Image (cartoon, rainbow, N blue to C red; front, top):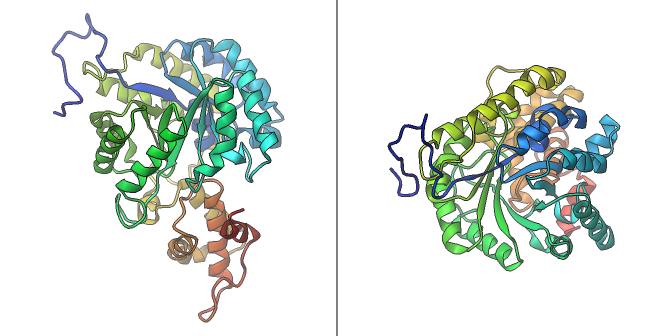
Length: 403
């Protein structure tokens, strides 16, 4: 057994000593969980019934805000995102709140002016946000500078993200290798990051890459390492365990009803897997079961119709074959279906890595995944053997110009 995870022989029905180095857990159910499974349609009123119970679990933080929530709440739900933040804060009083911030893009899809970025972070902090998980789709930390200054000014927690991506089936190659991620981690530490998140948005992180990656990051920087890995490929539970063996500090999970598929691994199996080890979470599985019962019986039936049930499997093998995030795949399929060109999907899969390479092997995460996806479809539908990129989108042009 790894020297990082050690079992203790005790009667755990009677005695459960506190672990020497417990793994901290951030719950994503109230943001990324329903964003991944139910198109971000979760309503505030359906979070309130479990809010106080979740506050008692002992999570390092609960993700409640950011990402696509602003867009969806305005566009589809008719709700005020700021009111959600204030409302949940009345019920969750002990556990810090976390949000996903798209750096200079804030919670939108383009870069915003500095004064707006300052004002947004200031208002978010004033309304109860504690942890600002900040990422840039290109891992270009120049886009962090404005928001980080304001996060620090407000006395809040700046979590810097490294978007995890690959050009090979496994970690390595000329671009996304161990040196690349170590260098990015050092950059974030020098910017004043309080923690560093490895953001594996497509579920590409293999278990035997997770171990050396976390080991290298722990040796390179002195701040905690946080792992965010979507379940999409099916590898994340295994990667979690190898990362824990390597000494990762914080893991992202969801409550079971909000877990799996393109979401995240569930917390409950991880709690039981670590029971009695020196990395035991200390969580009460009975408390988690009570929360799950409410979610399963009272809340989730309202959203079940939004779940993608077009296939039985909860694993998307295409992620492993094409290194394409699940949400991007579904968008490509829908786009081709609307054009009555779904028969071209295999050509799109073949063209996609070529377009990504032409654009600099960029990570595929909002908004770059959408930009690359649309251009790929254009190439398949409009290019000829003698001429490529006949129809270039304005977003691709902006990306090439660095806008």
